[in-house]
Image (cartoon, rainbow, N blue to C red; front, side, top):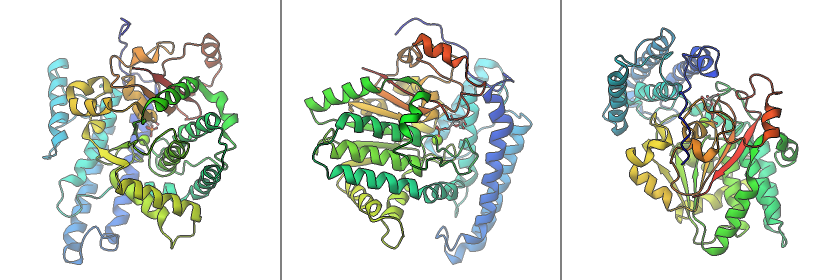
Length: 444
Ligand code: F6P
Ligand code: MG
């Protein structure tokens, strides 16, 4: 690791930044939407199977209490109140509360929204959202973002059909141009990350009309692109032994579908062998609005495989095949609470050594999305030209690759001088809008 000085953390204390805009404007909107969804769902608890008729009134009261907790959280944030302990027996809560103690020891007072690290504040908010329901008896499993996650898939079904047709057609062809298809499907999964719901505060984020044709035009927006190195690495490694892949997922809905399509391509192309296993890492609590939890993964497959729905047969066949991959354990869905701690990934080998070890068993980890990137690079105020591997500060359980559309300030690994010049001509908010992207890797 090079001895580059570690820069300051991004924080809402810097007023002219996206961190400030997020905590002052965007997160209160997300909480308001969570409150609205929760209150709308109060009358549907029985129909949606969350509670039986016997406990309807207790559950309705609990939902109202949860709304009260969410409103209190929003008020604490907007008035910059100090963080408080989370009250629950869940194993990650000890760690959250310990972080608060450590902060007090280090800085002499509790963390506050507009003072502490942005990453800490944003993770803490989503952990408090979970607490709002976790402390109840009957609505414990309620996910206030569930409705928007399901909607995100349903509203992008046409784009999913295009992709399903494409992969089904090429799977039946004898002479696949594996390299160019590899690039194509990596790009599909990359741009699928444009569709996260925290950026749009829950509004539709499906911009693709034709997800396979639009990609070439989009290449100019990839400001650091190591796809050739990625291809060389995958080709070389898969020629040696059965490739083991981990994918640290980001968002549900269309993005997850693009990740599944990528996995399908890797298997039909022979890059993944019959003995290859894919480990899909998901979140254990509702997270950054649209992140995939185990239930979201299953819901998506069940929905797509449902013969009574009007989407294409190709989608249904793929979804059935993917369900089978889970049944036969070719695919494993793994949730680990490390992913929803406020730590960046440089802490993983100390905080969650078992997770670090298990990631080490893969040949490659694909990290999807913006938040994973922030956690890879520590959400620090790096210079753009700092090498990606340096920004990882020692985190390298195995070879890693990040597929991220840029929706937050931290960007590293732009070593090309011309690109550094070009960036100077971009609009001021170029790192906030999800229009630019990176494909970066660090080899073990
Ligand atoms: O818009 C910014 C943001 O909410 C960030 O806080 C976060 O890093 C990102 O969006 C979530 O995006 P993704 O789903 O790609 O991780
Ligand atoms: Mg996300």
